[in-house]
Structure formats: structure tokens, C-alpha cells
Image 1: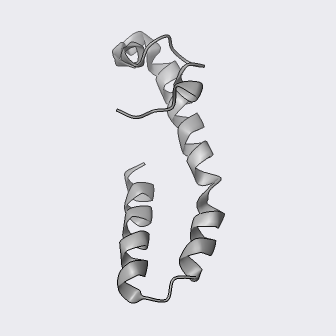
Image 2: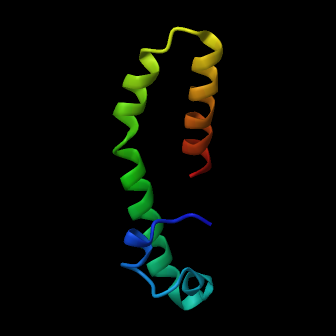
Image 3: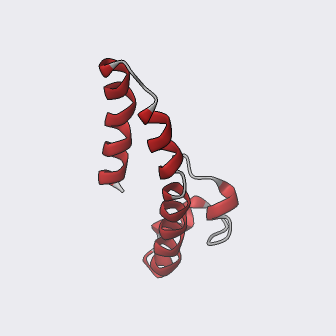
Length: 72
């Protein structure tokens, strides 16, 4: 798992703490924090992708961006 400790450390002592049902509220708050932080990068991602001229390179870059958004 890769979650930045700078974020999850605000909500738990260890990542394993999120497994416990009594920590569900903290786990959701942590996920909301991570998603909000990731979304702030969307404009820069789109700006970068508008500069790509090769369709295969654009697909290579765009598909993971779309996938990661739908899986969150």
C-alpha cells in the first residue's frame, strides 16, 4: 500500500488501524483527504495531456488518469 504518511498519520497511528471497524470514521476521513488532494492535480494533468500530439502517447497517459478516477 502506498498512502503518504503525512496524510494518514493525521487519522491513525498505523495503516493497520484502518482495518478495525471502530476506526471507520477516521478511515473515511483519510480517504476523503487523499481524494481531495489528488483532485487538486487534475487541471495540471489535463494541461499536460493537451500538449501530447501522438495518439498512442496520449492514450498511454490518459487511460490511467481515467481509470484511477473511476476506481476512487
